[in-house]
Length: 135
Image 1 (cartoon, rainbow, N blue to C red):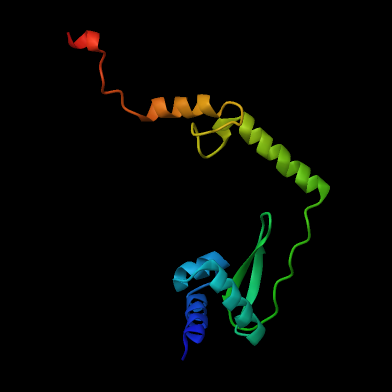
Image 2: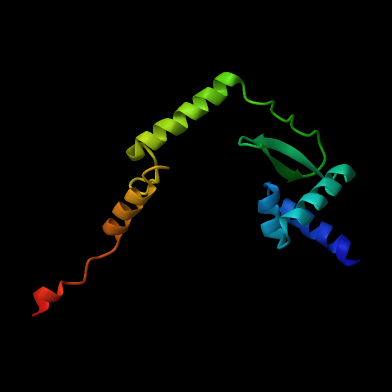
């Protein structure tokens, strides 16, 4: 078995451990993402792997699984209404940082320095004292 065939087998063995994106499979196979993608496409052509679903995001990512079967249909582009709704949600999160999971760690585009300073002040313990207090 040459080096090329062993990489395909490493990627296939990683797929046998569970489904995943190309990046997840690459991490399990201990190879680069580009090598994993090439080998996943080769496995797909040979009928040893297929796309089980697509995860949303720009662009949608393939979730691979070992075994033959029909590939999941790639979702179409977002409609104008979906795009507008997603944009509105992002704007709402930027305006209301308390609604996000990150809590205080929010960076606005125009106020990034201010919020970064507030976060730094909250997290760094103030163990220093003024030279006037020491004397």
